[in-house]
Amino acid sequence: MEPWQLAERSISKKYRKEIWNPFIAAVKRYELVQAGDKIAVCVSGGKDSMLLAKLMQMLQKYSDTPFELIFLVMDPGYNAENRQKIEENARLLRIPLTVFETDVFKLANGAEKNSCYLCARMRRGHLYSKAQELGCNKIALGHHFSDVIETTVMGMLYGAQLQAMLPKLHSGHYPGMSLIRPLYCVHEDDILAWKRYNGLSFIACACRFTEAEDRGEHAGKRQEIKEMIRQWRRRNPDVEKSIFASLHSVCLDTFPGYKHEGEEHSFLERYREQEL
Image 1 (tube, helix red, strand yellow):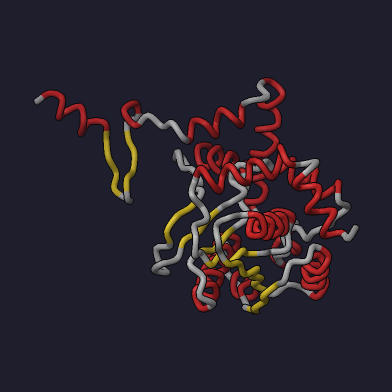
Image 2 (cartoon, rainbow, N blue to C red; image 1 turned 45 degrees about the vertical axis):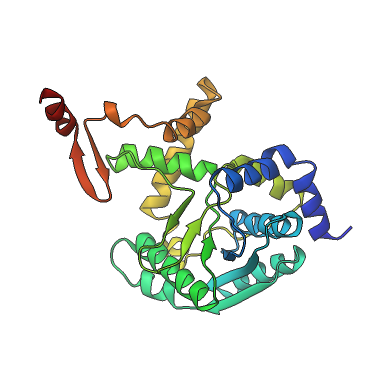
């Protein structure tokens, strides 16, 4: 059996409960894929995006809903080794890549502050632009369940806000384009287990800034949050599940303040209305 066949078989058999079922659950629950969609699956070369590409490929093969896929790789300035690794893994997993090049790393690494934020913003813009040029109406990113939880906790502890990561959203700058996150319900630990089971090796963050500086401040905080959640999980194995469920049952009536469409609101608005 070929490596791509083994990878697919492990998804549908051994990791069906951990990966395939949560993936399908997210696609259905959040209505991520519709008939006639043309989706650019954004492949960075890491474990998450490569698994996403394989899952979307399998979904297209087995689904009754007709849709098109493009497996889009933006080369932001990878070194030769990382570029080769991405292409080798794509061949191994039978994922046909569409590659285009940019100078994102060069521009972002030249910035004195917020290079990680600037890099992510520019990469997202290039992906939207290229996907739209290719006739796509959606881009799919590899953010997973653990990203959702970590982003929520990080926002509370470091951003002083309760802010979640949505499973899909409309682009504010590219009309007719949407972003979807099909791995929204898949845990990172299960992605790692699938990778190890298949003996696969993917690139990590290929940013030259983090190569030079070991890791950025944002990455350091992300690791801190990961460890914090691990400690919580030792005391309560369902803590992440509880956080995730809470994101789907926010009770605004109990919040002293909140934002809607960028506008700040206070509980006093409702309180004063009740006095009338």
